[in-house]
Amino acid sequence: MIVSHSFLTRGLETLVTYNPISVHEDVTLDELLERLYSTGFHHWPVVDDQQHIIGMISDQDIVRAATERHIANAPQDECRKNYKVRVSNFMKRHVQMIDDSASPLDALSRIIEQGIHCLPVTKAGALWGMVTTTDFIRELAYSSHVVRDVAIQEVYDADPELVEIDTPIEEVRKLFIAGGLSYVLVIQGDCPLGVITARDLRRHCCRQMARTLFDGKLGETCTAIDLLKTTSCLQRTSDLGSAATTMYEQQINAVMVCPRGEEYFGVITEEQILNRVCNVELAAAHKETVGTSY
Image 1 (spheres, one colour):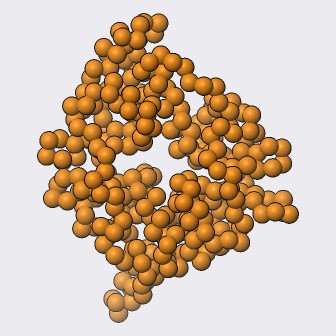
Image 2 (tube, one colour; image 1 turned 30 degrees about the horizontal axis):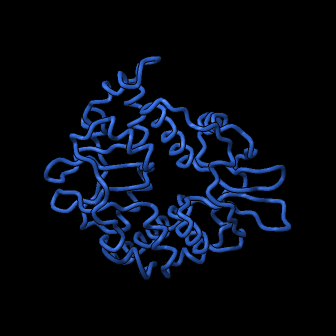
Image 3 (tube, one colour; image 1 turned 180 degrees about the vertical axis):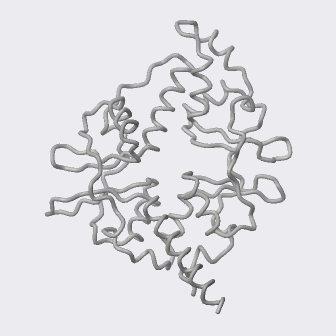
């Protein structure tokens, strides 16, 4: 039994982003700080001269490393001297990666199990590409996979944490930490306006902090509404294919669910969608295995 008629039955090469941005092991912390606040990247593989992956660096790793080396009330030039440290000194050395011969389902299962959003792909031991949750959402959006037709109401969160639009970002951050939240729904009174995910919040805070650490300039004071990327909404009777299409086209990882004329609202995320895809595929693979054993 083949559940999917598209992306999960093809090779991993149909999903990956080739020649992904990476950083060399000799790149220094001050360079990474500047790149972070100017471009806003999230994760980069760290490679040696042979393009072998020797580590992984995230926006959080960079901010943490700079904070540890920052000198309070000292001139910026003095602080930057402490940032002249190679990325190999503070990168994560245990890297989740996958070989190019693996299947898309293997990659998706690894991403879900590890709670990550990107997975470096290697070929002959060297960095070959990167596969991300966005790649899977894109392929689902334009595929004929059976999960496309599943109604949002079977998957979405109908009781998300609510945050008013004028809530300071620092208060939003504390709420995420205290509740272990993955997202919140931003509202104005009884009207839902959009979703802030933990990734949105982390990226914003890291980028602001990187600028402060690099040039001493404080970031702008923001409230919840400033982090909203879209006000798009979907009805709970819409299908997961529509949700995946909206997420990919708008480059977001969550959409609010708020039908007109009804009192409930909620959130649908890429994690919820990809979990359903993975569960369906694994169940089908198990059934196929059991069937061939008789």
